[in-house]
Length: 430
Length: 164
Image (cartoon, rainbow over the protein chains, first blue to last red):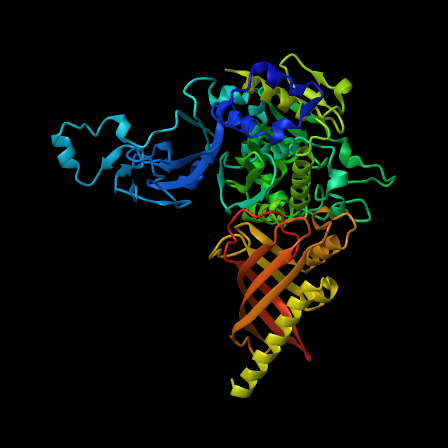
């Protein structure tokens, strides 16, 4: 890999614009895999997906295939999915339950915490003095693994801030999301939506903080009365209003908050809390635990989504998470998992599942047009006709508080600028 | 069931499902909607052996109002993911007709291959199984339930704009 120097990287990010090269240069992508996905906390799965000893699932950290597993003693492990012997990928199933992982090539087997369990004709080698208990002969654990409310993040780098430190100020919104579960816990249930596009992973990342695109990109989802298709049941807080009676695009009023570390959140598209129907049953359950005032506060979502740089997104109003998996400089996979709020009525979860089908499946009303945007963006930046992608909106109106939390009002591009800066800081760290 | 009745059912199911495929390929979406009862469900699971659409995500899980919304969106001038629009061609092969539902309905199972071409994009290929529940409404046969299971329904997909 040809090294890209700090000066060169700095020349690609200006306060209000980013160079097209960051979306198209394979050398930049390689460096991102090393300095961003190789050093940051990357989401790998939720503990509820590996409930029983022996449960496992396979995913990736950047380009690195890994296994998230629950060992016999209940401990959670993240292992590189690679045989210590000849380097083969060990597990090819997406998920399952097993007593041991076995490499198909020469039959080396590993415990679900990565330690070597045995290998064919082991005794001969041991006679020759080999000590197979050395860590070199196990499946290598990923350097660090920590979880927050059961969401497991792993870090390929042994040093650096803890997960909670890395989340910093963004953590509060994460905790509020989980607090909306009457039992105070969440779990992943209901499978996942998967979509992919021919484009750079940062198109999706930037889109998560983009409150300016909705009117143009999602025009086909808006009814003549100015509301979007009905998303939720109940009597209030059920529709997203795109235009008011004067045809003003009120959907563009939502602001963006940015937190140190490249994280961001966007304001809720639903100014009113959801009420009526099963939501009253849900409110009563929350009130029984927290009191009615707090229950009402939890049900009036202030945040639409919380994006943890570089690849994790909490869809707060939809009770789902989104994970970005870069494949190559111009290829990206994204997964959306519904989250069950434990203790909430079943009907609430089922409504969220239906809702996320309409908004975030590959065949949804909303995401499909975003995917079209990502692809066209990639096609556009592959041309060198113009060097820069602009993120100028709302620069003069953004403000930061003394905790370095920033806020931008309607149609601001503070989120993208903030992500670009975090990207640059990480990329320039040798 | 008499052999003659069975033959009639097979012929009627075959005609209806073939017509449905043609209406979709010809983008006659409003006529396509008319093939469905008002309480119909159109379901495309997102997992093989997915037990139900309520507790697990699906590629499509539409009731009739949602199907109408989808068609409305397909007719919207600013549906970017269909600008330009796809062309599709499907081959459907009826496998099995049966399961009389109290004399007013029955089930049909078929396999399908669907080829989609959108100018500027690589041609895409889908394959899977349709399950239709058909009900007799007077002289008409209508679709009350359709499940389209792709062999790769749990894969990561580029945007999908058209029903299977």
